[in-house]
Image (tube, rainbow, N blue to C red; front, side):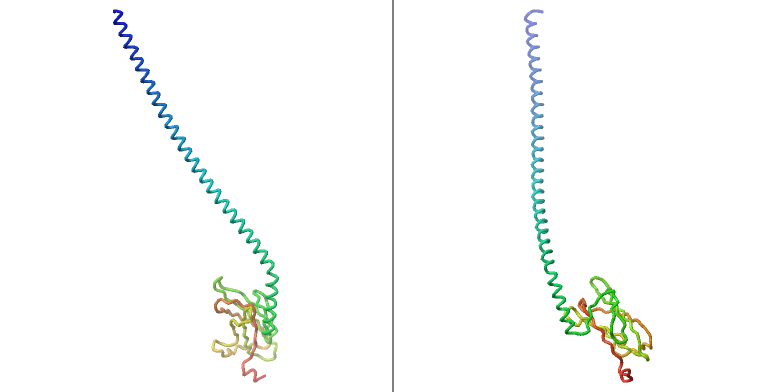
Length: 227
C-alpha cells in the first residue's frame, strides 16, 4: 500500500472521529439544555407554590387576627354588660319589691304564686293549695291541687274560686270548684270532718304568666239561708 493511500485512509478516519465527537458533543449539549429547561420549569412551579402558600398563610393570618379582635371586642362588651347588669340588679329588685307592695296594697288577699310548694290558705274550708307548671315550653298550663276540710258540724257545699293575676295586679283568669260550666252548684257535699282534694288545670290566654293568686270561698244560696 502506497503512502498516498495510507494518508487518504488516515484522513478519512480522522474526519470520522471528528464527526463522531461532534455528534456526541451535540447530543450531550441537547441533553444539558433539556435538563436545564426541566430544572427551570421545576423551579418556576416550586416558586409559584411557595407564593401561593405564602398568600394563603397571609390571608389566614389576617382572618385570624380579625377573628381574635372580634372575640376580644365581644369579651370586653360582655364583661361591660355583666357589670352594668350587676349594678342594675339591686335597682330592679327594689322596683319589683315596690311594685309588689303597691299591688298587694291595692288588692288585699293576693299571694305570690309559687310552684311545687304547699301554700297554706287561711280561708274557711280551704286548707292549702299547690301549683304545678305543666305542658311544653310553648304551651304552658297551670295545674293546682286544692285541699278542703270541713270543721263544721254539718255538711257543706263550698264554692272555691282561684283567681290569677300578673305582676301588675291585672286579672288573667280564674278557675272555680263546686260549680259546673254554667255556674250551677254541683251539690258535691263536703261532709262534717271530711278532708278532700280537688285538682284542676288552667290555661291562661296569650301565654300570660301569673305572678299572684287569690282564693275566694262562697256557699250556695240555700246554705246561706240555712246559716
